[in-house]
Length: 206
Image (cartoon, rainbow, N blue to C red; front, side, top):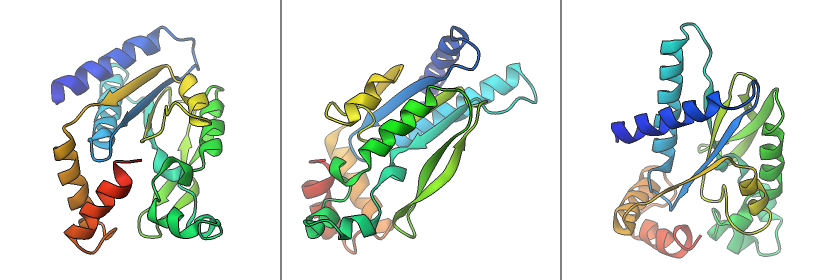
């Protein structure tokens, strides 16, 4: 894992050197639920920043990770849908996200300067608007989530703006075991049986 992270980080830094000053390198990272994509994204971002600071002591972070969870539609929006029961049951499917808002965000990243991004509060179970700031010194942006370059509208538009697209490949049984455990630990479901049902009926079909 460490070797992979180091290679990916070095590759991004080399590509960044070829860009014009102020231009950002946009990387989309996806994989099935519980594939480890978030952990990989964090590790690569941390490695990029560490290597950069070793060569430029005192400099600011140049890489940042933005998770797609911030574009979950709020529960109030889901409740107002005609199919609200299904929307809550299928929360996490691509149509329960603000795809258009995400596309606009990615487009803004193509211009220099500050860009605000939402985060997601697991305690409130809703997004938090403008909670993350992508500053001008953030030149490498890792966009992580299930649909960062999904090949249907509107997601495909965001995918076309990415410089690189990374797919995390993982054994399906291993991923299922992880996500069942995560659902129970985070309170998404009360029992392992419910977590297994959610994984099979919602997470992996998404």
